[in-house]
Length: 639
Image (tube, rainbow, N blue to C red; front, side, top):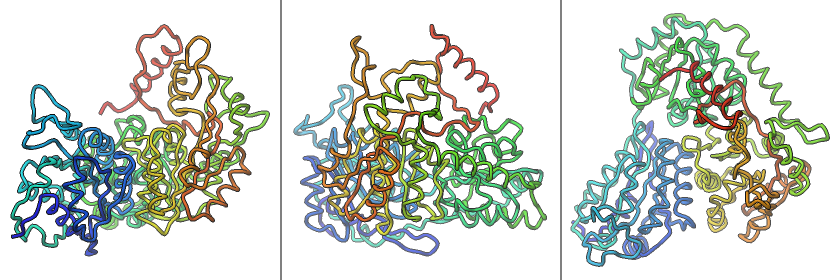
């Protein structure tokens, strides 16, 4: 037995957790990110100060931001390593809730220790305590229950043992992983208990591949054998199973094209002759055209988000669905014939069975034609520029915005040409991190890489503010690679505090800030559905008191330079090229303030997105948008 405080026992336990995957053993918990407050600085703080073992202690600048760093770190390590996050009570704890939801939606392990109010209730209400009048057991941390895979509150020191065993169970489960919240009552952190030595022994949590059930394999093979033109969807499960090579071999052997989700991108090589690129609302012409022509879809490791299926409009009711997924919940979607199994084992089992049956798809030159067609479109997007004959890729609607932007902000760079130049100039193995706005669409369509797992797009929750924190998480996971945050000005203003942490940790990240004077993606959605330009561009108030005055010029480079970051401002393609080249010479984090023209992002490619258009409006443009929405809804699958 070892007498120690609950917090000391927690630190010692975390330092002895390992995972094993395919026989390779790695230490699971790299360290703890924290913003110390009165709820943890004495209990957990003392434990880390006295004996942190081999754990690193990271100092966050914002609780949500540090938890995004930890999420990206786990993702880039293919869920084999984590950084735990600890906060004080009240606001500090509440700040991590958004990050918890982000991790859970994306099936990424995130271990959180929000401090809680006193178990004894003696000083109630302690500073920052939330008091619910109908139950004194309810605190801020109860809000985590909706966004975590496992939740517990430590009200006695001995409860730590069962709580942490269950936390590890969930964090290492390929189907159920997500955020785990272990709420630490601040008085209990300092209470002592005689913990058994067995609690601190080295534990190796084996992440096992879920085997294929013969009965489910037989059902899936029967469907595929009847298919003439199947399509494979490469989802995030392919990445976490490290099944990219297996999927490429499968598609090559049976002449089947595949398209990628945001999470599955770079699990396979962009140059692979069967890779169509992105699918769905943010997909390209190759993926979407082939999806509409497919008679069977083999969906590997995807949860079928509305962006992947174009709100279920890409696949008609007659299309047969086969799923390979470790999650039974996801495997059942779209009335699929399911295989609840590891992606790699599932693909290999399907290949063996189809090989024995002599199966081959009926495709001739369609796959190459689709890829060639998209290659021509890529050339057009890459060469897209501003001149006297400039026409926006997305209908401008408000004709004054673009000339005003050129005059007052000074930018003449188009978003698609900027992305093409960035991809050309940065290292081939660089990591690309993004999350929200129009950039995920442009990047899923235009970003190419033959460096596996280098694309770190958080698009399950599309959480503004993930980008810069995520780039730091990617850099901590792969310090040998350049790390780039693809960030809009809206997301940058939402949360960029961990840029300072990158300077503190001397982990260089590169922020590519696409400034189009507002929330351009939502402005497009708003105006394309008949609504006016309402609070989606960064404008001063006009003489009528509305937010329709002139654009607000912001010098993001000047702001970031105060953090010790090497900054640049790019208003032309020549300036962008110089900044990209020079930033590669730097040892400190960089930020390039890229002034990109509004309405110069990609759009469309025959995909529909179901959004809540009003059914009745005094605005005829809105009524027309509702009519279009209803017509599309009738063509889509119901469930």
